Length: 339
Figure 1 (cartoon, rainbow, N blue to C red):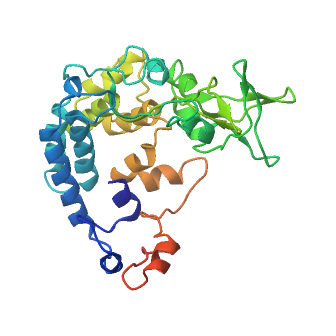
Figure 2 (cartoon, one colour; figure 1 turned 30 degrees about the vertical axis):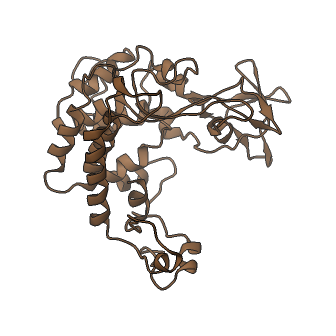
């Protein structure tokens, strides 16, 4: 689904191919790709065990298939897809073994991986000779002002050289958090002390921080998992498809914020439920790679990006097909419009 969202028509390969066959394989229309994705997810949802019955931690469960199926319906937006998405989501809601964790920070605690909120979580194991995670290294700050990697101290621990500075925090995200929302400081570091002892106020993601990770050849061998789908996402999609704020309010209640429709909620900024859901997804799922795809499928990307701090006045709906792909097979690979 991510490939379709990024590039539109993509090759749909359903069987092993020879090299000659692959050169004749062009881009398959989006509608046909979505049809196959949905068929595969429906089969998986009906045949996989539930989360409580998986044979091994980290194995994919039926609830994961239902959740991704619902998101596929909401992205495709054919007639009747909202009802189909709702039906898929209700196969997850209040299921045994699936719930919000009591404290938001528990989601990123390395001792509490694969908790009850996690529905689809990519597994990593830190340390030498293990399938370690690279997220913390990628998202750790990069001091690009002087052209060198950041080093110094963060929360009293050494911040090693080698940060990639990816997934940067914008002023728009920082300012989107309401006063007293604990998720901001759990999600974002507001700066670090450089090796020269100077505070650098550049913000960076800390959801995947692993300051105790062992290092080999300047690479942190981190122990973080990566949560692809979690229960808070399911609840927010349920409010989206039902028009009922009770699911959104479960997410807000976890962090002690005023419920939508109650005194204290910032109705001046989010006066309708659609905007309230958009806001909640931004701060609840911050830096987890949902934001752009959310805005794109709701049709809000042009408006939001035009008014953001970077003031992006024009965006292309699709990414360009890589030149290497077109060069490799110019007879059947075409470029997306606008590139």
